[in-house]
Length: 196
Image (cartoon, rainbow, N blue to C red; front, side, top):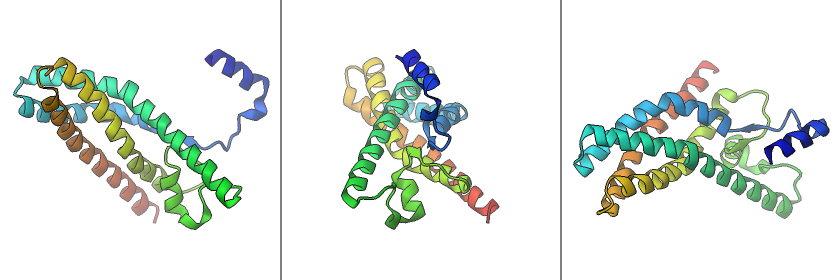
Protein backbone atom coordinates (compact mmCIF):
# COMPACT_ATOMS: atom_id res chain seq x y z
CA UNK A 1 0.00 0.00 0.00
CA UNK A 2 2.81 2.43 0.89
CA UNK A 3 4.56 1.68 -2.39
CA UNK A 4 1.37 2.46 -4.30
CA UNK A 5 1.05 5.80 -2.50
CA UNK A 6 4.67 6.67 -3.30
CA UNK A 7 4.16 5.79 -6.97
CA UNK A 8 1.04 7.97 -7.13
CA UNK A 9 2.87 10.92 -5.54
CA UNK A 10 5.79 10.48 -7.95
CA UNK A 11 3.46 10.22 -10.94
CA UNK A 12 1.56 13.37 -9.95
CA UNK A 13 4.08 15.66 -8.23
CA UNK A 14 1.60 18.54 -8.03
CA UNK A 15 -0.30 16.53 -5.41
CA UNK A 16 2.55 17.02 -2.92
CA UNK A 17 2.21 20.65 -1.86
CA UNK A 18 4.90 22.56 -0.02
CA UNK A 19 2.26 24.35 2.07
CA UNK A 20 0.64 21.19 3.40
CA UNK A 21 1.33 22.15 7.00
CA UNK A 22 3.05 20.29 9.78
CA UNK A 23 1.87 16.94 11.13
CA UNK A 24 2.79 17.23 14.83
CA UNK A 25 3.65 13.54 15.02
CA UNK A 26 6.85 14.52 13.18
CA UNK A 27 7.73 16.69 16.20
CA UNK A 28 6.37 14.45 18.96
CA UNK A 29 8.09 11.19 18.06
CA UNK A 30 11.64 12.59 18.00
CA UNK A 31 10.94 14.46 21.25
CA UNK A 32 9.78 11.27 22.93
CA UNK A 33 13.34 9.90 22.82
CA UNK A 34 14.91 12.33 25.35
CA UNK A 35 11.70 12.29 27.43
CA UNK A 36 11.66 8.48 27.65
CA UNK A 37 14.08 8.05 30.57
CA UNK A 38 12.54 10.67 32.90
CA UNK A 39 9.03 9.44 32.09
CA UNK A 40 9.98 5.82 32.84
CA UNK A 41 11.74 6.90 36.05
CA UNK A 42 8.70 8.82 37.33
CA UNK A 43 6.22 6.13 36.33
CA UNK A 44 8.38 3.32 37.77
CA UNK A 45 8.61 5.14 41.08
CA UNK A 46 4.82 5.54 41.29
CA UNK A 47 4.07 1.96 40.18
CA UNK A 48 6.68 0.50 42.55
CA UNK A 49 5.14 2.29 45.52
CA UNK A 50 1.52 1.58 44.53
CA UNK A 51 1.94 -2.11 43.72
CA UNK A 52 4.68 -2.97 46.22
CA UNK A 53 7.04 -4.42 43.62
CA UNK A 54 10.80 -4.21 43.27
CA UNK A 55 12.55 -1.46 41.33
CA UNK A 56 13.64 -3.99 38.73
CA UNK A 57 10.10 -5.23 38.11
CA UNK A 58 8.64 -1.70 38.03
CA UNK A 59 11.29 -0.39 35.64
CA UNK A 60 11.06 -3.42 33.35
CA UNK A 61 7.28 -3.18 33.11
CA UNK A 62 7.23 0.59 32.62
CA UNK A 63 9.97 0.45 29.95
CA UNK A 64 7.97 -2.15 28.03
CA UNK A 65 4.68 -0.33 28.63
CA UNK A 66 6.14 2.99 27.46
CA UNK A 67 7.67 1.42 24.36
CA UNK A 68 4.25 -0.04 23.55
CA UNK A 69 2.62 3.32 24.26
CA UNK A 70 5.14 5.25 22.15
CA UNK A 71 4.96 2.91 19.17
CA UNK A 72 1.22 2.15 19.22
CA UNK A 73 -0.74 4.44 21.56
CA UNK A 74 0.67 7.85 20.60
CA UNK A 75 0.42 7.32 16.81
CA UNK A 76 -3.13 5.95 17.10
CA UNK A 77 -4.24 8.88 19.26
CA UNK A 78 -2.59 11.28 16.81
CA UNK A 79 -4.43 9.68 13.88
CA UNK A 80 -7.70 9.93 15.83
CA UNK A 81 -6.94 13.57 16.65
CA UNK A 82 -6.24 14.33 12.99
CA UNK A 83 -9.51 12.64 12.01
CA UNK A 84 -11.39 14.79 14.56
CA UNK A 85 -9.61 17.92 13.30
CA UNK A 86 -10.46 17.16 9.66
CA UNK A 87 -14.07 16.28 10.52
CA UNK A 88 -14.42 19.49 12.51
CA UNK A 89 -12.89 21.45 9.62
CA UNK A 90 -15.32 19.84 7.17
CA UNK A 91 -18.32 20.60 9.39
CA UNK A 92 -17.26 24.19 10.11
CA UNK A 93 -16.45 24.94 6.49
CA UNK A 94 -19.76 23.52 5.28
CA UNK A 95 -21.79 25.24 8.00
CA UNK A 96 -20.21 28.65 7.42
CA UNK A 97 -19.49 28.45 3.67
CA UNK A 98 -15.91 29.32 4.59
CA UNK A 99 -12.98 28.51 2.34
CA UNK A 100 -10.52 28.17 5.21
CA UNK A 101 -10.13 26.51 8.58
CA UNK A 102 -9.86 27.32 11.45
CA UNK A 103 -12.65 29.90 11.49
CA UNK A 104 -11.48 33.52 11.54
CA UNK A 105 -13.47 34.39 14.67
CA UNK A 106 -11.46 32.13 17.00
CA UNK A 107 -8.25 34.11 16.71
CA UNK A 108 -4.72 32.91 16.21
CA UNK A 109 -4.38 30.99 19.49
CA UNK A 110 -7.82 29.38 19.09
CA UNK A 111 -6.88 28.37 15.57
CA UNK A 112 -3.73 26.63 16.80
CA UNK A 113 -5.72 24.83 19.50
CA UNK A 114 -8.28 23.62 16.95
CA UNK A 115 -5.66 22.50 14.45
CA UNK A 116 -3.00 21.17 16.85
CA UNK A 117 -2.67 17.63 15.38
CA UNK A 118 -1.90 18.90 11.88
CA UNK A 119 -0.89 22.54 11.87
CA UNK A 120 -1.61 24.59 8.80
CA UNK A 121 1.28 26.28 7.02
CA UNK A 122 2.87 29.18 8.87
CA UNK A 123 5.75 31.46 7.94
CA UNK A 124 6.57 32.77 11.39
CA UNK A 125 5.58 32.14 14.98
CA UNK A 126 6.89 28.59 15.22
CA UNK A 127 8.50 29.53 18.54
CA UNK A 128 5.03 29.61 20.15
CA UNK A 129 2.84 27.69 17.68
CA UNK A 130 4.61 24.34 17.99
CA UNK A 131 4.87 24.33 21.83
CA UNK A 132 1.20 25.38 22.12
CA UNK A 133 0.15 22.56 19.78
CA UNK A 134 2.25 20.18 21.87
CA UNK A 135 0.47 21.29 25.05
CA UNK A 136 -2.91 20.67 23.40
CA UNK A 137 -1.86 17.23 22.18
CA UNK A 138 -0.78 16.18 25.67
CA UNK A 139 -4.47 15.54 26.40
CA UNK A 140 -5.11 12.79 23.82
CA UNK A 141 -1.59 11.46 24.31
CA UNK A 142 -2.20 11.15 28.05
CA UNK A 143 -5.27 8.99 27.52
CA UNK A 144 -3.57 6.88 24.87
CA UNK A 145 -0.57 6.34 27.13
CA UNK A 146 -2.76 5.44 30.07
CA UNK A 147 -4.90 2.96 28.12
CA UNK A 148 -2.01 1.19 26.43
CA UNK A 149 0.22 1.08 29.52
CA UNK A 150 -2.66 0.06 31.83
CA UNK A 151 -3.59 -2.77 29.50
CA UNK A 152 0.02 -3.96 29.38
CA UNK A 153 0.87 -3.54 33.07
CA UNK A 154 -2.38 -4.97 34.46
CA UNK A 155 -2.02 -7.99 32.21
CA UNK A 156 1.63 -8.66 33.04
CA UNK A 157 2.29 -7.24 36.48
CA UNK A 158 -0.93 -7.56 38.41
CA UNK A 159 -3.42 -9.92 36.70
CA UNK A 160 -5.10 -10.79 40.03
CA UNK A 161 -5.96 -7.13 40.72
CA UNK A 162 -6.23 -5.30 37.38
CA UNK A 163 -8.12 -2.33 38.90
CA UNK A 164 -5.26 -1.71 41.31
CA UNK A 165 -2.73 -1.84 38.45
CA UNK A 166 -4.83 0.52 36.31
CA UNK A 167 -5.05 3.00 39.19
CA UNK A 168 -1.27 2.82 39.66
CA UNK A 169 -0.69 3.43 35.95
CA UNK A 170 -3.22 6.29 35.97
CA UNK A 171 -1.36 7.97 38.82
CA UNK A 172 2.00 7.28 37.16
CA UNK A 173 0.81 8.92 33.94
CA UNK A 174 -0.63 11.89 35.83
CA UNK A 175 2.80 12.53 37.37
CA UNK A 176 4.74 12.02 34.15
CA UNK A 177 2.34 14.16 32.11
CA UNK A 178 2.52 16.94 34.67
CA UNK A 179 6.27 16.89 34.00
CA UNK A 180 5.70 16.93 30.23
CA UNK A 181 3.19 19.77 30.63
CA UNK A 182 5.66 21.83 32.69
CA UNK A 183 8.42 21.18 30.12
CA UNK A 184 6.10 22.24 27.28
CA UNK A 185 5.00 25.40 29.10
CA UNK A 186 8.68 26.26 29.73
CA UNK A 187 9.38 25.70 26.02
CA UNK A 188 6.47 27.98 25.11
CA UNK A 189 7.56 30.65 27.61
CA UNK A 190 11.17 30.49 26.39
CA UNK A 191 10.03 30.91 22.79
CA UNK A 192 7.79 33.85 23.61
CA UNK A 193 10.40 35.61 25.78
CA UNK A 194 13.28 35.14 23.33
CA UNK A 195 11.20 36.39 20.39
CA UNK A 196 9.60 39.35 22.18
